[in-house]
Image 1 (cartoon, rainbow, N blue to C red):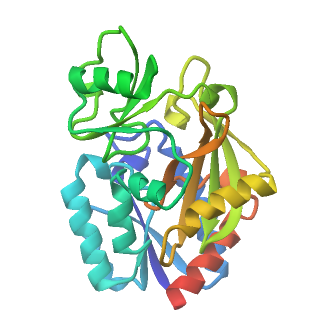
Image 2 (tube, rainbow, N blue to C red; image 1 turned 90 degrees about the horizontal axis):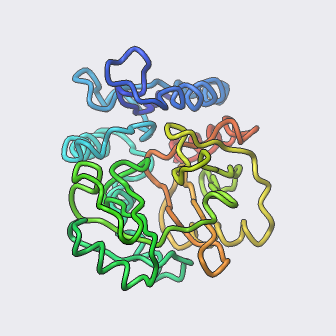
Length: 294
């Protein structure tokens, strides 16, 4: 079985546009490739927008570390449509399209998932931000683009402060949430599932003085052994989504009410925290073999 693992040029150290966290691709792929090989799967890393990438030559295609997709969404969408037409796309195209825009959080809320209070706005301008302070009844907020990942063009804003420059704010429609102190005090939990089976959990913490948990901003991760209650809550979020899922990452953060709530349900290109999952490679390979064979 020949499978393509899609990535981006910015995930390679030799690239002129290499990301600060490019090494995470190597950590993930180097854990996956030998496990897949042992399962009879030839896993190949391919740059998603390379002219020589031909989906029809692969039995399945995984959306991997494509961490530049939000900067060229139309081209990425066209690539995924082609992959879906010529091969088997994992996760499925319908699921990916739904999950690409953070408005999917509205659907999860309607299905009963515990959510962080959110204000939705067409643009991240002063009027929308000031209105959000009033609606959320707080003095410290985080503004995120509806189409975005990895804290791209995301900003924390305190009431009374001068707004960040336009290029540092979401470029289009956005979501606004209260800043949650628990991100620094406790951390953010990432529950990893492959073919809906729990694999491992990482506890993500930001660097001192920051709130972003991504490694490119100095964030770090440790292994977390979830309680039965925590795992049941994360599993219930996943159960509200239909269809085959090669991978799913349920990110949860403790809200102002002291309860865990969903910050993200990552069903497209999530980092899978290989260092926090001792059985990560075999778990992933088994899920891939089961779904691709089906």
